[in-house]
Image 1 (cartoon, one colour):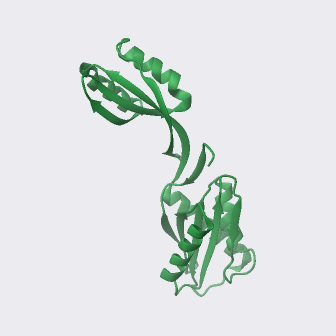
Image 2 (cartoon, rainbow, N blue to C red):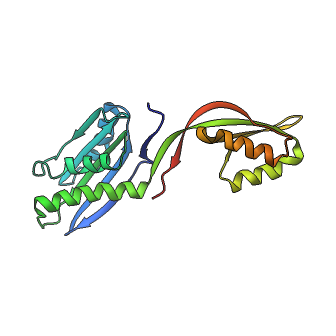
Image 3 (cartoon, rainbow, N blue to C red):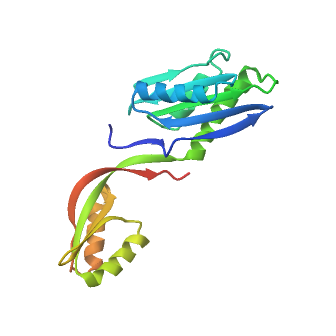
Amino acid sequence: MSTEYRTIARPGSNVLEIKKSRFITHLGRATTEAEAQAFIAAVKKAEYKATHNVPVYLLGDHDEVQRASDDGEPSGTAGVPGLEVLKQMGLHDVVAVTTRYFGGIKLGAGGLIRAYANSVQDAVQAVGVVRRVMMRELILPLPYHLLGPIQHWAEVNGVTITATDYQAQVTLTLLVEDTAVAATTAALTDQTQGQATPVPGALVPTEVPVRA
């Protein structure tokens, strides 16, 4: 796994209606083809009455595995458009199945391409995107009278406190991006007027939301 990549925030689905046809894109995470195929099989079982269940998936930090099927739609109008959307959004380790319930009105090749692409895109936007970054633990022993002010400082500055250990002193474990260690250390030393200095700890891969 690379140190940073983007994927969906959570499994989920979204419904798009176009000219009486319903397009339901189901999204899941997968790191192996077995996981992707199991997700596809589960959707097909649940949506067995659908006209089409179009599966696509991208696996690997560099999209080493890419699969797409039109599932009976005209060649190139369903699977590939959905797959291209995932690639353009920079996502990895994602499986999508777009279920179509035909509404009686033909969309034509161009209409199908837009419908399947938009359905996948809307579903991704609905569930959200995260990026994985390497975060550094900072271990901060400090006197008890500084606990409240430092907790407030962390909240204001968007610094996550992952653990609090109450002993002779209180020890906080904070999580910051590895590139921000020096600046955060300086800020904490300043906030405590030199009474406490954080010690770098382990690197932790962490998922953070990607804002639209």
